Length: 336
Image (cartoon, rainbow, N blue to C red; front, side, top):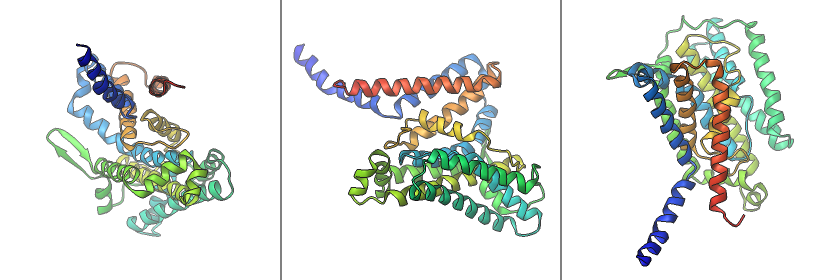
């Protein structure tokens, strides 16, 4: 019995600890718990109509969260993503409504502007050594103010456009009783691609090294500054694309759209297991974080909790997940 017990300790305990230490383990358990609780409390929660509704909202914040995960893994973050989300559809629809360009050309111009905003953020952070908090906070005001100035504060018309581009970005189809938007497929494709880059590609090692120990990474030849600039560009482009996706889906381009998204996106990324201090990031965890907050927002409304209480639940989930991550890491490092 004794030898069996020792063998069990030698074989199974390390496996259990390895599973628990996976960053995605905690978010997955939390997501499953949410789904079970809301399904038991309200049978309409798992209806095809409600699931379709949840899937329709996931891609827009989700795409921003994917870009933010890459950036936060490198040790930086971006508070201007919500403003970029708001201004890119404004640029695209303004060009169309003024007759200055087709929708396709407007889309390209909007994406270039988003990329330039990201490049400016990265340049200020890496060349002038200003913290990303201050740079992107300032950029948030510049971009949001520009959107309001261009539109005089009024939404842009979006209902007079006819373009295949709209179907490519947000076209919908049905699988049985479920309504699926093309934006969900784009979100899944982006998640698979970025997960490959972060975990399998050489640049993924650069990103994690830049966030973990920048000095050591530079000494080993990692282009830390250039890597961070490109990640700021990626995050801004993903935010701009998400904003255009939203404007097509809801048939509205509002200069105030995306307000507050930056903090909600950071919450999704942190809940998913990416370190706020950089050095460790997980795209799969972020996808779980997006699902956790989307299910939470939908579920509390179904069971009768006022929507205004949503932020209370977000804060509680962040505290719980941070406590879980801290306890797991301390147990895996008993000497500290």
